[in-house]
Length: 173
Image: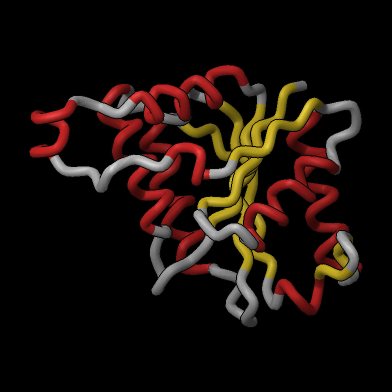
C-alpha cells in the first residue's frame, strides 16, 4: 500500500506533518511518502495570475503525488479557524487543473494544535469540503494539546493512541 502523508502547513516544524507521518507509520507494510507543502510553493492564486502565467507546474506535481497514492493521511493545521494559506493556495492551484483534487482516494483527516481545541474548527471545515473534491473520507481524529500527548515520537495518551491505531487499521483493511 502506498500512503501519502502531509501536514497542511508550511511550517518547517509542523506538528501536523509530524502527526500525519506518525499516523501513516502505523500502517504495517506500507510505503509512506511524506510531502512538504514547501516543495509546492506557488505564487498566490488569482485568476489574473493564471491568465498571465498559466498554472504553475507545482500544481500538477501535487496532483501527481495524490494520483500515485492508495491512501492519503492529511493533518490540517488551523490558522484562525481556517486552512493555512499554504494549503489553500496549493489546493486552489491544483483545482484549476482537476476540480476533483483528491481523485476518489481514501483519506484519513487529522488535525492537531498545541492547545486543547485540537484544531477542530479546521477539521470540521475539511470534513465538510473534502467530499466535494472527491475525497473518500474513511475517518477523522482531532488530537488536542500536541506537546502534552506526543513525547519522544510516540503518543503517550492511551485513549488517543488507541483511537488513532483503530482509525489507521480501518484505513488499511
